[in-house]
Length: 254
Image (cartoon, rainbow, N blue to C red):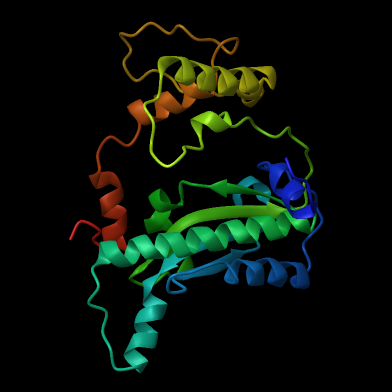
């Protein structure tokens, strides 16, 4: 694989949940945000709220960013031009999510290059009502993700990824053979078990069906079982998230 400063920084990136007391300078913060702004976009439908209260920030990080899908700002620009948005919410929201996601990743990469670490908090959409009230978020703005950020007080190992043949497909999506699936699962599970990730975190998702026998312990509970339990047991009702969209006056099912 080719190595250079940018690629090595990206390849060594990991989630940081413990931070030193060092506070990023305003120049460092503005550089991170400006790098995010420079990400590719469809309509610049991403905006950012910064929070600096370590007592309430995730992991007591010195700074925390709320990354927003922001249709409100574009509607104000359109209004100044004498236009009104007629594009559907689902159309607008999908482009907003792309813009916001690209921006967020640029910010994370920029922070990494400055010696900072970060962690995505993907539960932000489920906190939409709380965030909307606390941050005075207007209608047609939806929190996509939260990023905690600061200087690392830990150095965890890089987490495993799927093997390339399970990730990169040539021209067409292939039939995934049982052998390929098993190998991909083994690479992920062995990697997490070798790092004792779930044991150190003390975290195993319980079985919601109490009639099922628990066959796993921290000796064999790996990534694929963990993610499978999330996907099989959590958020089974689509209305749970649709209600959050409606709180922001967005109806993606229209």
